[in-house]
Amino acid sequence: NTPTEVFTILPAGNVGIGTTSPNNLLTLAAATTPALGFTTNAGLSGWTVGIDTADANKFKIASSTAVGTNARLTIDGNGNVGIGTAGPGAKLDVQGTVDGTNMFLRNTTAQTTNYLSFYDISGNQWNVGNYGTSKFAIFQNGTAVGSSGVVFSGGNVGIGTTVPNTTFDVNGSAGVRGTFAVNYTDGGCNWATQSDKKFSVTDSNDRLSIYQSTGNQMSL
Image (cartoon, rainbow, N blue to C red; front, side, top):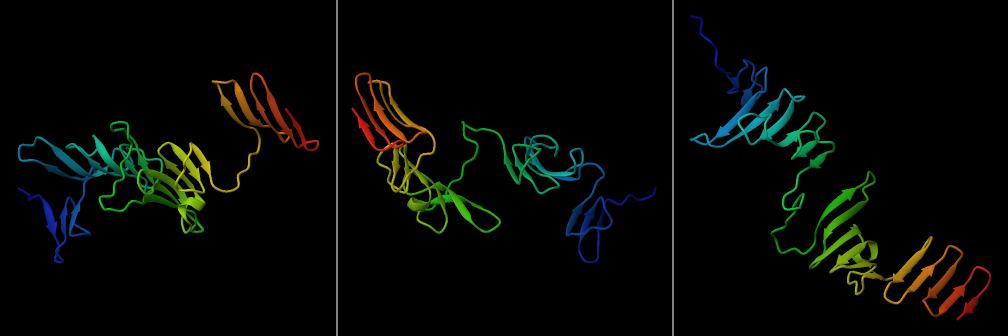
């Protein structure tokens, strides 16, 4: 009988399984889904790492004995990484829910400020993450958090401050383009700015109006 070559060992020490020209210390080659499997002695569980030739030659890590089944992490030919999806549509595509939360980012050190950073092509940086104790912030790097972003704390929102004391707390100048209204259903009172530079306070009994569009006027 003609002997069948099972694996190859080159003089440099490279080992090839399914190939006579291994490029690395260990090279696996197969026409269909070359993969490396891991199982317990009893075979009760298995993980597989390899190339899924049935799915555009994507690299996958699967919680099964077949690389194309139950893929937990996928990297496609464009470099996109998918967690919970075999068809990532972005550089990092995470899909799936666990207890209503898509993804956890946790820091086990004593730091109180941890965030994700986003850069544009010019190097400008914006950060999103926790700030201080029980606060969430969106801020620009290189400037103080309170002066460059938004802070959420205990249901309050702060702009220009890291300690918002009311539901909406702005420390600094603010402008409104369009209509800004605050309605109180309990007393039928309405506060509003109008597009014609009016500011009015109205309730079911009285009206206080300040007009700027045709000169300074006040009516009670």
